[in-house]
Length: 461
Image 1: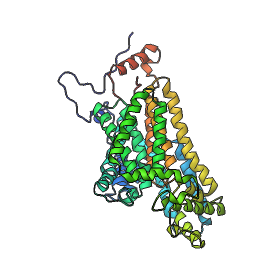
Image 2 (image 1 turned 45 degrees about the horizontal axis):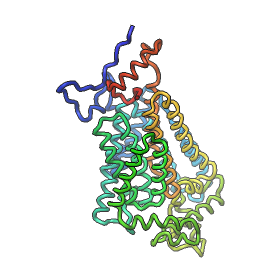
Image 3 (image 1 turned 45 degrees about the vertical axis):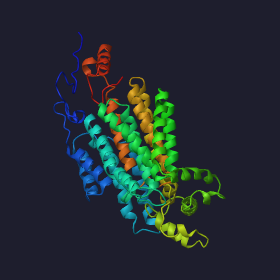
Image 4 (image 1 turned 135 degrees about the horizontal axis):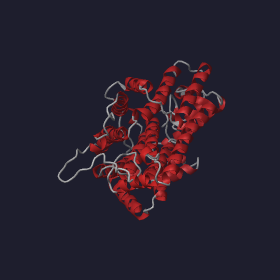
């Protein structure tokens, strides 16, 4: 007997109209959308981008309690295990630090990042909640840091021709890194089954975010963006179309980016030698960063096992430079390591660094596992995760030149993409009523291709 055909989640007929947000709000009967944990996650995303309300910690506590007490099994992203390992190692090394005063607060910050991953992976548990969290993140990123950067660019509010915004977004190098994750999400959405207006908005987002990275004039951002673009070009089957898009973006950047951008890009060639690194830029930032890297490496060599303590690199740097009579004036005082990897080495030693690399590698491994499992049945969603893996790689390439591990964005990204992967993979399990025949799976696949279902977790073409 032929199985009954699944009815679409939303399917306008004739003169019927659907809400522009129906792809988010229309849901099967009994499926909750506005849960406590989900609302707490949205509040947290709003706070860490806008800095409008002092509710970040409260939102995360509420979200974590909702996840733990909600009655559902807690899903643990593989990367979170390694983050917990970093936290545990930081607690063990705390008594050995020469700078114990501020370490407890920094350990609490790392515990919050661990909680961010858990809440993002569990609070958005349905297809529509995952969609809602992703779209909300992109909207808030556009409304605050991107709007602020463009405002500063239009009115010439920058330093050495470089533009950023406020708060955690005030450093151009770090701003460029933060932008890579929303950029990857926009690219993935632009080639998804989202409604046409959402895909078109994402295409605009790709253009704006690309220009924003150039406006920061971050050399690390340039290298990471180029890496991301090359990976996308390599995995794209319709390469002529991709090349046309790249050409359009390049033309847009040429038209909008100030002339200083090209001078700064040209300075990359000076970074290959210590003799010419001082000529890489007029403000001497490349030379100063190289000197700071040397200090960070010296700190690690003196504290190879436990490091100097989580979050106290600036104090250790100031002490080391104060004892060096030949240090550049520009690197004296409390400074950042300007590299996520060297900062972790200096603060956590080799054990903490192994945990950090484990976080990155296990997240990559989960991406690749998802790609492999989806590839045989769903090429579209498999490419989604290829794009997400590419922007994850680009982010951590940029982190060679900036302290991108101290903020919530990569942990939020890892948690949400884990939830998205689990949602995609759930669609691969045959429904009980159709498990005994191959006709059911074929019917489901043909129904999707015919446009009769729009659920994010269903199997695509």
